[in-house]
Image (cartoon, rainbow over all chains, first blue to last red; front, side):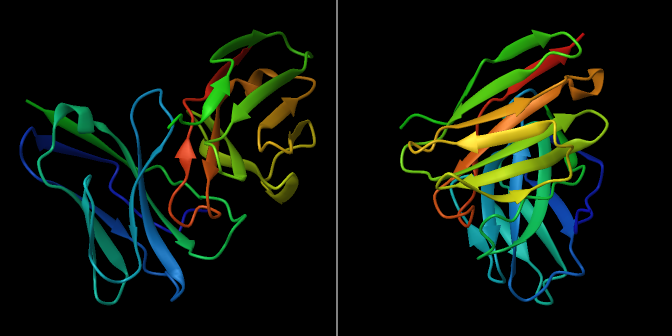
Length: 112
Length: 113
């Protein structure tokens, strides 16, 4: 079973920041938080991952709480092309061969 | 650089037949994973290969099998197809066991009639 809990759906206006929350209260010390998204009928796309520090790349920012029990993915200026299902996954960093366990994710709808 | 290539994109098969799907990973990636996606069960892990060896297998019946070749290309086979095998089959490759993320292909849409 997935070790994360996400809201089923969220809406966001184009140009505004989209903040997607994820709860992972049972995360262990050697597990990272990964975010993927899946646009309709395409394969999932890796977005970002982090351990305990906040992370930023060209796609998004990841904010992890100090106790690591929750995190937020931030898309700073959402566009219509960001409409997708977003998956939050916890996984050990050195667990080669360990599967990604996908939950149901959050369906983000960006509208103009 | 080229992404993960899956062939064919679409496939229609009859119950009882078998099917082989192909995945070419990103050049240099030695790890290949397979996932099944259905509306009811979501994304589920099938198996992962590294350097021609299966490292992990999901909870699927023995009708589902796979292999990896020396050039890292991978195939998965489903024998004695059932209607419930209709799904999007996704392949993902990675450089370091997924540490820095997996790159997924666009998938093969299999329909069993």
